[in-house]
Amino acid sequence: MNSFYAGASRRDVLRAAAAGAALVSLGSQAQSGWPTKPVTVIVPFPAGGGTDAFARPLSAQFAKNTGKQMVIDNRGGAGGTLGAGIAAKAAPDGYTVFMGAVHHSIAPSMYPKLDYDLQKDFVPLALMANVPQVLVVNPKNMPSDFKGFMEAVRKSPGKFNYGSAGAGTSHHLAGELFKQQTKTFITHIPYTGAGPALRDLVSGQVDMMFDGLGSSAAHIKGGRIKALMVSGAKRNAAFPDVPCAAELGLPDYTVTTWYGMWAPKGTPTEMQARIVDELRKAAATDELKAIWASNGAEFGNLTPVQFGDFVNAEIKRWAAVVKASGAKLD
Image 1 (cartoon, rainbow, N blue to C red):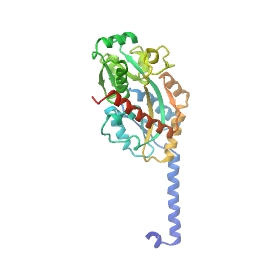
Image 2 (image 1 turned 90 degrees about the horizontal axis):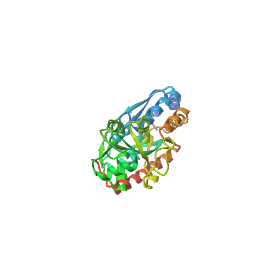
Image 3 (image 1 turned 120 degrees about the vertical axis):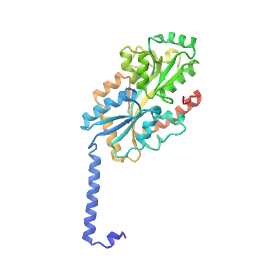
């Protein structure tokens, strides 16, 4: 028997038990009352990229629904792996979540040593957005039609370049896959995130990007960059005038950029459920539906388990692409 109970009276034991029950009750109330303070979302890319395009309106809607702030903490660098490592080490108290992207399913195949494991150090919560990849160019640097673009690239191998959110990101691999399938050579210029890469594309410092439609959408609509192709076998409803890869003779060029939410491993199950519930509530609002649609995105209506299975499948898929393309860190 525990030494405390061995020397205690029955009344002391009952009082201790009652106090313990009260603490458990308070802990349960604290969890069920989540959130009682601001929630931090670690976004592993600089402001202005594709992840931001969804994280910021989501945070605004979350605050509107719950009365508590969702604070965006941009931690860019190393193709999104720096921020992921920080998120993996965050306190699993339900007040820090991680909004990563397809890049994080590629990273295990590109980075020989990561200080986190996406499958072991996080718990999957929700697939927040799924958008097609788009080939965009600076119209002052490149022809504004796909046929002219291909003629220019084939005529001058290595002359033109494409920016990416960093080595090992989907922007990088989408470019390598395009080069592989079209038998062309375009120079890769890695940045610390899609935001800086897009700024240089708009200013003409780089010629093109293979970007997620979410981060390029506003610039395309504003005429600052020109969309030549969306990946996949169908046009995107938000940009019906942009041809898809299949109709341009690239039936196997299918690349999507997706964004998901995770919590650090050890986050209480009840809090995980509350977070997922609030994410779904926000995604179901007319405000976010309109923003997602304008960015050519769809909400991934998956359970946490289904999202976890999806990520595992993506890790395997991108490992095969990396191997076939021979892509390496620059």
